[in-house]
Structures are given as structure tokens and as C-alpha cells.
Length: 472
Image (cartoon, rainbow, N blue to C red; front, top):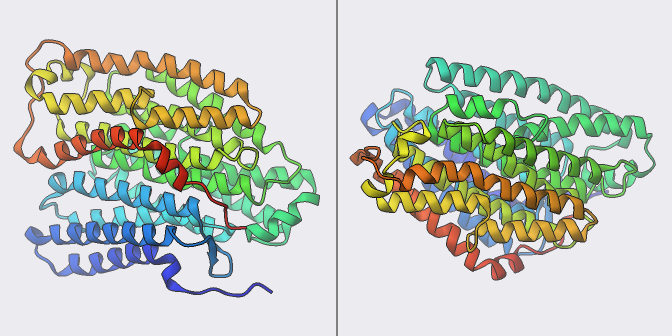
């Protein structure tokens, strides 16, 4: 019988986010409207404390908490830091737009709950906990997408909710089938039971489970919500939707491929490789024709999932897969949030043409945008460049050289639509105006650009830290 480990310190980052959300909800009911920012400050403090707790926990050996339902290993540790760091940046970006809003405290609480859901997804080692994480990451995000209560926001929330509810039902059905097939919901026990399971039941359950996680990651064929939800929501929420749930879902997919499905008779690796190829190609092709900056970044997010799925496809087949995925997740998160920070700093610049002359009026902001956009391409010495090299290496090492070649072709093709944004930025013109209240967003953009460069230059030591065995 498995010994029950119920040490709350093992899930301290998750406890801090949950406590911050509950306390923030209580404070919001008593604080006057002019003091609701205190709830946002509390959320930021909880995120910082969670990052510190996650960093301390990452120095210890891999373990499992609460009856092996939650793993505390390098995948969980790195995902915690990326998710909490991303949540902290979203809170900073939301400070000015939400100031004195009638529902300001509720917004901060919803952000914390969405972050908590992504944390649960990243560490879940039990199908029931995975389902709970999916719901916790989804329901607050539906509300955030339509938080403005205007036409585009309502449409974004409705599309996001309908697709999420449908694929969520498929995910729960898949979990039920896998439980009936493997006679357990815990990954360690499923790992042995699924080897001799009926292939038809195993395939049905796995596809249902995969549907929900692909939805959270924004990958094909569960990507239809991404462009409309990102375009219709506010820039800080769009930044959250394209970053934080994606990290949790991809960590969950990697853990599934590395533990319970590692020795199953299903062609899991080939299926993920095909999904990776289709996601990166479709995302790039659709982005070519976009002029709305948020919609362009939405399709960029779909294409980036394709690259991120490459190490998932070779989980258990290449030792480079785990550090490659975790490093790329961190690189993508900081670079994508940096690009959205520029969008937040220029709320009236919606079209690519609206950025004409930005380099003349705001040179540092323009430089930050250029660094982030070139970073998303994978230009040295940015972090995404090294991340792509690592995932390409892992794909080749795992026997998917064709996927690495296709990813390289897609990388070259993506230069086109990122340059369509960069050219107006460095062209002559008056440039978009910025307000004094956008100082926080500009600071995030500057910091994200520097972090992308710094993470790229310090890639060697970071990759070494990300290696380590998963909890089995």
C-alpha cells in the first residue's frame, strides 16, 4: 500500500495562491473602491512568495505528495516558477487598466485562480487531480475573457466557454474510460496496467484526455478559440490566455507521455509529432494575413505550441526532451509576455500600421518590441533561439528528424509576419501616443526583453538545472 504523504509544505506555492485568492475575495468585500488595489498587491506578494517557495522546493529530491497524486520534481518546479512569474507580470500589466474598476478585486482573484489551475495541471500525477486542474484553469479564464462585458469580450468568452465545455466533457469521458481500463487513476499504477489493456479502450480514453489538454495548450485541432478569445479580451487577459494555461497543459502532456503512456501500445509519439507539425504550420500560415496585433500574436501562440510539442513527442525517448521543453516554456513565456506588454502600453494601437514611427517616439519601447518579436522567431542570442535548438536536437535524438526539418522551415517562414510588424515600427511617422499611466507596462516590456536576452546568454547553466528524473 502506498504511504500517504500529506506534508503541506510540498504544495506551498499552490497553498499561497489559494490563500491569496480567498483572502483577496474577503478583503474586496470590505475595502472601498479606491483601495481595491490592495488586493492586487496581495496577489503579487503571494506570487513572489510562491516563486521563492518553488525555488527552495526545486533544490530537494523528487517526491510525490498526497498519495502520489501530486509530483514535486524538476518539471513541477520549473513550471511553478514560469507560471507564477507569468502571473506576476499579468498582475502588473493589469494594475493601471483595472484601477478603481467596480470589480477590480474580483479580477485579481480570478487571475490567481487561473494561475492555481495551471499549477495543478503541471504537477498532477492522478487523472482526477488533472481534471480538477483543468476546471480550475478554465472557469476563471472564461470569466476573464468576457470581463469587460462589451460585445467583443462577450463573444470571446462565449466561444471560449463553448469549446472548453465540449472538450472538457470529452476529457472527463476519456478519464472515465482510462480508469475503467487501467483500474486506477494514479499515474504510477496506470503505467503498469495500460501495457496489456485493450487497445480500443486505451485509444478512446487517451484521445478524450488529449482533447482537453490540447484545448488548454491552444494546439490544433482544439485551437479555434484562440484568435477570437485573444482579440476580444483585454491585452492583459490575452497575455494570460496565451501563456499561463499553456505552460500547465504542456507540462501535463509531457508527464503523461513519460509515465503512464510510456510503454503503452498506442503510437503516442507519432500522434503528438503530427499534431506538432500541423500546429506550427497552420499557425504560421494563418498569421501571414493578420493585421490586428492581438490576432497576430494569437496565431503566433498556436505556432509556438507546435515547437513546444516536439519534446513532448519524444518524452522518454530522448534525455534532452525534458530540459528542452522546460527551457523553451520559460523562454516563450517571458518573450510572449514582453510582446503583450508593448500592446498594453499602446492600447490605441490595434493595427500594424498604428505602430508606424514608434522607434522615433518611444525608442526603448520599440527596441523591446523588436527584441521580443525577433525572439519569437528564434534569433540569437534570445532565449527562444537556444530553446529551438534544444527541441530540434531532442526531436532528432528521438527519431523525428523530419519534424525538426519541418520546424526549421516554419521558423524561416515565420520571419515574414514578424517583419510585417517590425517594419512599421522602424519606419518614419509620428508614432502611437502613450499615456503616463502606461509606465508599468513599459517597464514590463523592458524587463521582458532583457530577460529574454539574459536567459539566452545563461542558457547553459539553466539547462543543467532543468535536468532530473521525474517522479515515478
